[in-house]
Length: 267
Ligand code: ADP
Image (cartoon, rainbow, N blue to C red; front, side, top):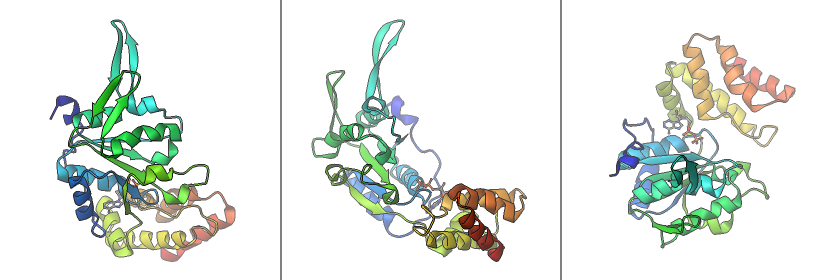
């Protein structure tokens, strides 16, 4: 393995609590280098899962958080000018393809469609990446795999992955884990006791039922961990829940009061 890529190895085992058969399915997908799409709401464990899988498979992981200002060059690379003249610098996707890493494009739908199409030749049986500006065709390393995350809730007609992109991937569904497992995760990731973690999960379940009825997104596992961390630091439970669970997800005063009331019900 080249030195360029060694820095991307996941050194310590990330804590990942499997929810169903996703670990075995991903291993099978990797064994045939199938490009993968991890679908699910924000903060439900997709990134943690891919970190865990990279560690388990012993492969380096290069993660790119996608945004709408991202251009194809941000993924593929560009010529840079310095005192010695111009030189080419590989972007993260090229580094992963050239040296054999798992490349994780987080929230790929945020990127513009002209950016998304650069991944196409890497996801069919050619497994190549044309660097048009440089005039080079990179053949993907045998260990290379492309993984994208996708939140089906966010999409509008204007902003969705094209079918021609979607159909290049195998997909795994992620969701907030069932309450027993989520309680286990929250108490593992924070210093709170299981009883407190369980109450946080119950509040989240209330809020998740309001999705589509005034809330765009429910309270995520990530938010429960924030709240748990504050509580473990000695912050008043109600204040911690208001700050970490309620205020971030709603600006509507009625919804805010309803969620604050749910907090008081459980604590
Ligand atoms: P996503 O990528 O889906 O937005 P993350 O992977 O960042 O979400 O998950 C947010 C946090 O939730 C993680 O940092 C981790 O602490 C926790 N988490 C969620 N699901 C799991 C799980 N199954 N096992 C371990 N931790 C989890």
